[in-house]
Image (cartoon, rainbow, N blue to C red; front, side, top):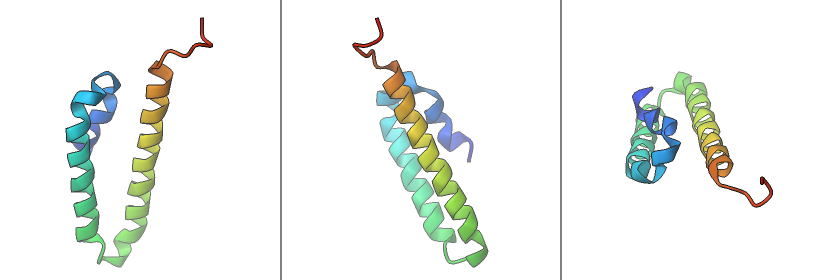
Length: 73
């Protein structure tokens, strides 16, 4: 599970890792679909999906932070 998000620790090589990242998302999606028929797992699925969205928010923040803005001289 931790290995699938190793791409998130490499913001500089983001463009190279987009295919890997998409594959990881698809695998995660398939995994969630496979275990979705077990009712006890539903809270876990919500937790994982919220964690994934938090990771996406952090990626966005990192990309924005690394982008030079005209205000910061």
